[in-house]
Structures are given as C-alpha cells and as structure tokens.
Image (cartoon, rainbow, N blue to C red):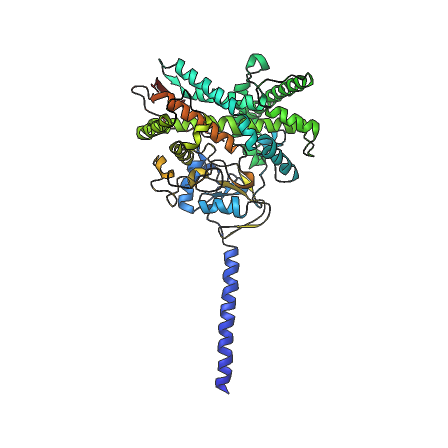
Length: 498
C-alpha cells in the first residue's frame, strides 16, 4: 500500500515541479528587462549621445549588447546594433515596426509629414508609397533619366578638367553634380537664385541640415521653448517659407507650360509633371493634394542629393587613402572602357571591383548612420525581449557595418571582401543597410547606386587623383541626419592618357 502511494505521489510532484519551472521560466523570459545604462533625472540618457550619436551608441552597445534600452527624456528608445536585431525589425516583424515616431521638425518642413519618409504608417502612407514606387522611381522611370545622369556627370568631368592646374574642392564639384541631377529629374531643370528669387541650392542644403537637427521638444515637451531662445524656430520658419515659395513657383511654371502644350524635346518627363498628371487625372484613385505633391518633391531632394554626394565624397576619400584600391579600380575601369571616349551606364554591370568599392564605402560610411527611427504599433518580441507598443527603435547601421561578428578586420577598408560575396546593399541582406530595408526602405536606392557608380567610374577613368602636398586627410565627421566629412575634400587631378 505504501509503495503504491509512493509510486503515485513522486511522479506527481516531479510533474508539478517541471510544469511550474516551465511556466515560471517562460513568464520570466517574456518579461526580462532590456540592458540599459543608468539614466539621469529629466534628460534620461540624452547626455550620452554626444556630438556623434552613431559612435556614442556603438560604444554603449559594446557594453550593454546588440539591443539596449535608453531614455531620451522620459521616452523609451531601443537601439539595435546587430545583424540579427536589424533582421528581426526590418524583416521578421517589419509590419509591426513600420510606424514613425512623431517628429516636429519633419512636420514643419514636410507639410505635416506628408512625405514618404516621415509619414506615419497607414492608408495615406501606403498610397503615396505606391505612387513613389510605381510612378516616380520604378525601374523604367529610373532608366528614363539615364541621359540626365550621363550629361551631368560629363559636366562634372569637364569642371574637374578645367581645374587640373590647381587644388580642386571635390565636395563642391560632387554636390553640384548631384544637385543638378536631382533638380533636372525632379523639377525638369536646374534652378539658380536669379530664376527662382531665392538661393534654391543653399535653401535645400539648409533644409536637409535642419531635418537632421535634434529637437529637444520631441523628447522633453516642456523644454520646447529652448528652440525659440536658440533661434532654431526662426530658422525653421524661414526655410519652410522659402521652400514653399520656391516649390509653388516650380509647380505654377509646370502648370503654365503644360497648359501651353510646351514639351522639352528629348527630355524625360520630370517627377513634378508625373505628380501633376496623377493629381489631375487621378489615375491612382489617390486624392493627391498640393501639400502632398510638394512634400514628395522635397523627399527626392533630401533622400537624393545629400545621399549621392556624401557617398561619392567618402568613396573618393577612401580611394585616396588606399592607393592599391585606387589602382585596382582604375585598371578595371580603363580596361573595360578601352577605346571609348566615356564610360556609359551599359559598362557598369561588368565592373565588379567598382561595385565592391561602393559596397565597402557604404559599409564604413552609411550616409545616414542611424536610420530614420521606427516605432512599434503593437507589443512585439525583439531577440527574445518583450517590447511594448509605441516604443521607438533606432537601428545603428554604422555599428552593424563594423561588427566584428560579421566582418574580419572591420575597421579596415578592403573592397576585395565583397568580390566573392553575395551580400546585397539594397535591403535583401542586413550586414550593410545604407538604404534601410523592408516597407520603410528607401525607394530611390536603384537611382542612387547607378548615379554613384557612374560618377566614380568616370572620375577614375579620366583622372589620376592625389592629395595636395603636405596635406593629410581629416576624417572628422560633421553632425546631422546625413554624416559627411566635416571639411571639404581637396585633391589634385591629373588627366590620364586613355
């Protein structure tokens, strides 16, 4: 009798023990806390961002792990710094993380965030994303602007050639080319201050700079008044007003020209005209309002001009610092373009080392190192951690590109690492994500890459570049949404005999 009772009670206790352990462990894992540095009253962890947040957050992630919790003011913000975390956010749970946190700067500069990049997830965003992908930046549309890219790149080469007897400010040359390409593609022509009544280039540059300015009011609302004291509010109001005046002028010129039936022979239809056609014909079923039209044009400038010339400047910088890589690239380009006056876009597909150079530059210098923040729309798991709805996440693309778990000698510039690699930079892989990925990935990726590849190929095809004598390259970065070199890139260019 005792033995029979024992044989029942013992297994029962064992079963209850494991059942309790299973449920207790599951509950504990579901609620395990994200690692987090100590925060200060009121400001939280804002003091730890420093002047270069992508670097400061990278140092913190080395201590606290690939996902960590910070507090900007009273708002919780997760920082993701690994391939697995990026994949979890932008692929596995892409839909959950597809919202944008409120950004007052984008609201003021982007017509209440009516653009693709900053618009909150919802029906309006899905509609304008569709307009962008299917009508503005489809592969067919991108190809239609080939002539613009090749003409403006040729103009850049001519400009460099004219300055071969002196030190050249390559930043000025590259930014001018990028701005001209985007102006012609988006607006149909290049604008200057005489034609538009304002300095369009300077205003657009200031617009991009302000878009990346940290706004304390987003995280500590009762300190919003600080922006009035510092003059930030006044600057934003002026730029927003100037931009609106400029964009209204551009749109009215397009409307008048279209009413007169004036067509530019040989020119592809520009993006402003595409948007006006959609607005007038309502081909998509989307009520595209004037503010939305202007916001989408600004998207093109913020995501196009700055990204292209920043990537170009870093690429040339790294090539100047690594002569062997420069020589290898020149040999490839000059061999494939042998007997041709100019490299064309048809040649780019065969230039594998060129593509490796661009990928390696994006790995070390993603133009937007902290991708535009996302926000969770519901409770979600991130690498096993329970994340509540309405939590903001920042993906540190700069840190991911330098992760020693993914890369050998991650701080070294070695384009050869990509020659036998299938890693993609268009959002399919997560080791290099300069353009983001998933629903919120940049729709202009293909356009930007072909423009960058063409410009680099033509420069190394036509010139031998060198640093001015007794000059060292200053690799200090500027601050803002887009991280470019702090000082302009100065170089000497010697025409090569090809």
